[in-house]
Amino acid sequence: MLAESPLATLYLDLLEQTLTGAILQDTGVLPAFLSTTVVASVGYDRERRSKGRDWPTHAHTMIGLERLRSLRHLVAEVLENGTSGDLLEAGVWRGGASIYMRALLAAHGVNDRRVWVVDSFAGLPPPNEKDFPADRGDRLHEIGYLAVPLEEVKQNFQKYGMLDSQVEFVSGWFKDTLPTIPVSQLAILRLDGDMYESTTQCLRSLYGRVSIGGFVIIDDFGLPPCRQAVEDFREQNGIVDPLIDIDGMAVFWQRAGP
Ligand SMILES: C[S@@+](CC[C@H](N)C(=O)[O-])C[C@H]1O[C@@H](n2cnc3c(N)ncnc32)[C@H](O)[C@@H]1O
Figure 1 (cartoon, rainbow, N blue to C red):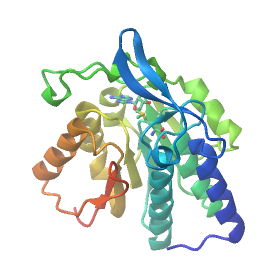
Figure 2 (figure 1 turned 30 degrees about the vertical axis):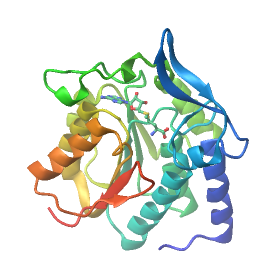
Figure 3 (figure 1 turned 45 degrees about the horizontal axis):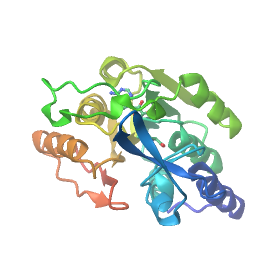
């Protein structure tokens, strides 16, 4: 793996603690769907935050420490191998994982790759049960907590000194924005849209642009609709590259061939 300078290691370690809220033991919430309450407060639990199993109250990513650490390794690997392309996250919430990708480029002195930050910035879509029956009954669109406006996400990038010309924001539903997104090659494709529809639209639009040797990261593989979308896409496209578990929820694979 590409070596980090001692300062870069300290910086990235600190960012992981800060972006997840572990450093201040930021409390979290979980989906509840009880009466009018769609999220319920839970305290801070190190194991839960480590594995990205709650949504922080204040901190900027919900993916947890283990997925951030995995992302760090995968970015280092594509940089070391010279795998061409930008880094893209579809489904960013408050922006924390994308901020971390931009910081990883900065920590390695990379200035010829961009980070694409793709979201509705208005939460998840209601389920389209006709076209994507696996999403039937999905209620994530009811959760205002998951809707973070673009301006707020930009401000979060600014707070870390990461809002610059190497970051591109793409706002709108994946089905509308991704087919024409002006990205030619991706070294890292990070999908975090939870639903079957969101996952499959990303794979259909973007998988063809992942470089050989690039990584596809599926944050929500532990959620049955997302998992089904991934399995259907891989089967339909003859993809047999092994799925590697990250933390019991997220997986990744390395694209080995066309
Ligand atoms: C679980 S959150 C992402 C968490 C984030 N990666 C982090 O680091 O904390 C899911 C995000 O996906 C977005 N999203 C889901 N489906 C979408 C779609 N079809 N089009 C646009 N945005 C979508 C939501 O707006 C939300 O911000």
